[in-house]
Length: 268
Image 1 (spheres, helix red, strand yellow):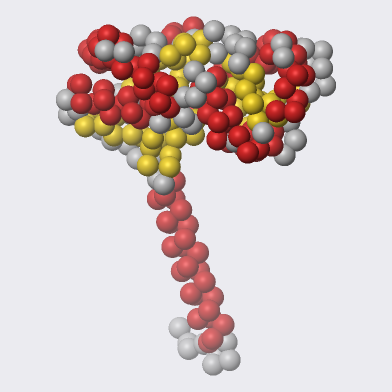
Image 2 (tube, helix red, strand yellow; image 1 turned 30 degrees about the vertical axis):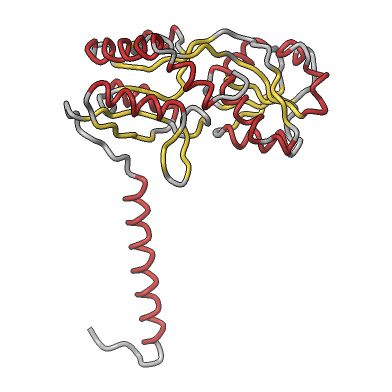
């Protein structure tokens, strides 16, 4: 190949450098987006979480924390296993469990008949339900809880593919729903007056009310549904299910479970 024209040489060098940069950037991005899979290990407890649901499970300074994280650490000690958190999108948690990519789901999951068809659950560790977060000055408008949303023009915020999202869709005909992928985004929308109420699980609503006191948000504590949170386990893994249930029983007997719940969840 002939040497390039001296006039064109700087441009060719710049083009080559740019292509190398883009190639390396694309490679780094692909590596970063890959799901890290950890093979089953008798000494390891692979805990599947969707770490965006404070105060149950979330990240702070890159570390997974919350009530579920606290309980997972204690369950690891109880079973003699090292705990490894695997952060997975909420909608992919059940598939990951069924495919043996994780051993247990500890991510604020509600027991439902549809989920029970696919996986087993431990004994419930928390009674919950759907409640609302509203602006303090609007509290009187929502005094009857979810019933306040019936036959109204309120814009209701939900988190996509959660029990709250399903409940509002099935319960309120013609509801004006704005769905979010993250609960924090829904809270921001409420503060910015882009929605009128946010319907979500009680523990998370209470948490957001507490940390947004300066924004004058308040929970409407009337439960619209009665739900129970538990941990998901593969149906064939009866050994882990029995261990988790025994662990929860001992926490209850020592009244340690309720203390932990009060530590992490205000109002409850």
